[in-house]
Length: 413
Image 1 (cartoon, rainbow, N blue to C red):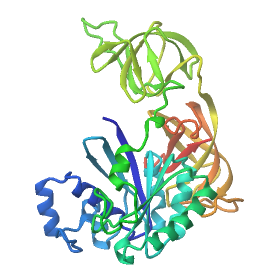
Image 2: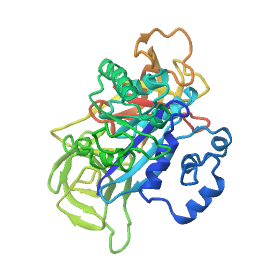
Image 3: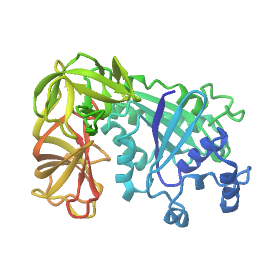
């Protein structure tokens, strides 16, 4: 059974948390004790006597203010598919949280309040979807109950959003008229909108094609752990454990160890504690090589005929996530999956307006939530692909040297 990772986005009070709660509730993914607690805590109750938004608003500050601050992750499954949902914050000052959640998602659900239509935050989140090369976008026009389930309102909003999608180059966009509060067109089709002839939202999410997101070409494997038991029984055992990021690896394949640029062959592959002849994208594995090579955590094992880039100067787009300002010459750690190296901001080229995608000159320090094009120089070479080629090996994070906190979300160009 495969997994769909998707994120909900939209403006404040568009109903993101309620939508996720409805998906969990109507698909029977809530335990009895959770329901009892939910009924006691509910203030904004629906016809079932519960406030579904509470299921995702986990932080105390969120519950007190009635908003979503952090990215709340929820997990559920149906008979067809497993799901990981990220509930992103709607407030402008928490855009950084939304970008972080979206960078690891395969699909974005953008909610639009049927009373408000397409607004600035709708365009902002759509631009982020475009910037992150999101393959699938769902536009859920919510609160249809508050506009008398009007087909005219739905068609007007859909037409306005189609102009936004065309301008941004969003190709696979699907539209749904819904009411998360009442459950219309979420899990079951609504008889209140007979004019809508599409599937309910959950049915679409169960069947949307995501196999294209798995890259079975350009094999990439990054070492997460070097296994050397050095026991009497396994005195010469040396295996390199990690997850196959993309592609297929077979016993006997010629590979290159990067960044060392040393060629060798795969002598053995293990997964699940057993030997196998091959492994493919998204599988955990332990790979053995024929030659005695110094291979460490963070190194890559790649097919010799399909090499990624190796450099200590990288062009990036960074969403700045910290209150401390970003300046040229600042030093950080950059974490690229399991590899962590020191980096310096060599040059800030320009800022990107997330409302228009226009490039503007940099005249001052980069502040919280701003998106900029930056050239970084690292203390040792990184092995990477561009984000457009592979978001798995084309993204990273900047970490503050002092506080050890994440300060920037990085997309490698």
